[in-house]
Image (cartoon, rainbow, N blue to C red; front, top):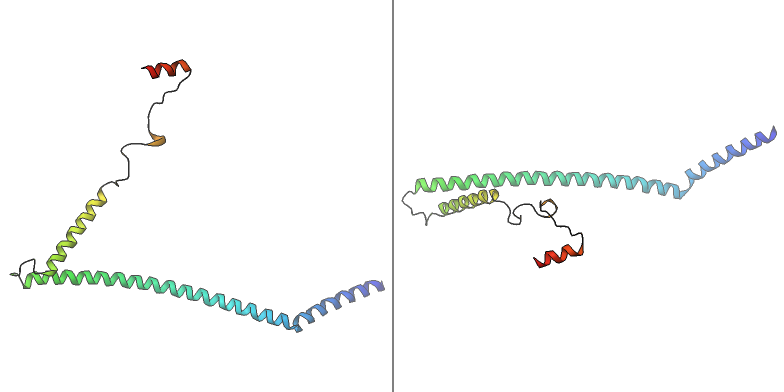
Length: 148
């Protein structure tokens, strides 16, 4: 029975000694501080990534609205220039020329979307082509095919 007390005391002493050595060791404290700094840096990095993503999303929206507003302004200028200066020839009116160019470019884009791409072959090709293949069974058939 005394050896059980000795073994239990030894075990409790080892656990207490391990805990005290871990809490008082300078490397453990340094490691704990480094881990805390690492977690803080990871959190800050994730925050910066999220802020950057939000910034680019907001910038894209602003650029889109700016483009739409610019198009509205340009169309307004083209309309009012033709209304306020009806006697001006179209070749002298810069807005009328640009509107005509935009309309022709838009029409050509609409037409090009309807056409099939030029790299497609006509009909089925490759494995899906329905073509009867001739199989030769004997050498006599091959010489007959060559002769005809």
